[in-house]
Every structure is written in C-alpha cells, then in structure tokens.
Length: 85
Image (cartoon, rainbow, N blue to C red; front, side):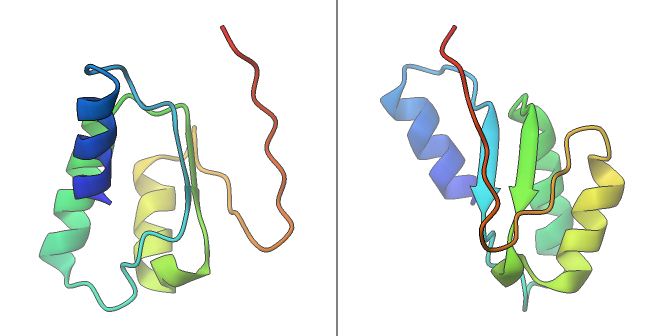
C-alpha cells in the first residue's frame, strides 16, 4: 500500500490521494508494518479509508481506531460515489 501511494503521487505530480479503497494485504503483517502503514496513510491526507477483507481483522481494527472519522468498511457490494472538483 505504501509503495502504491508513493507511485500514485509520482504519477500525479504529488497530488493528494483522497481515498484508499480495497484490500491492504496486512493479514499477516507484524505490528511494526501496521504502525508504519498507519503513519504513511496519515500523511496521505485521505478523506476515505475503506479496507476490505484481505486487510485482515487485526489490521482493520487498528485502522478503524486510527482513522475513525474517515473509516468505512468495504465489503463485497459496497458502492462509493465520487464527484470531480
């Protein structure tokens, strides 16, 4: 996830990433990696964080506690609507 955020910023000339939606593949991640991911997501300036199943339950719980104001569970069939600025 962190590498993907960095790459998106590179492609967009450093524009803010507003949403991360989908599996973060942290199911088998150790605590240090989860903490590092939370720190980098905090720096991203997100307005929506919507992890799905392959994020893993422990990491999902940590993300929910870290980002309660922007956290949205994203199970199968979840729909998000976005508008352009």
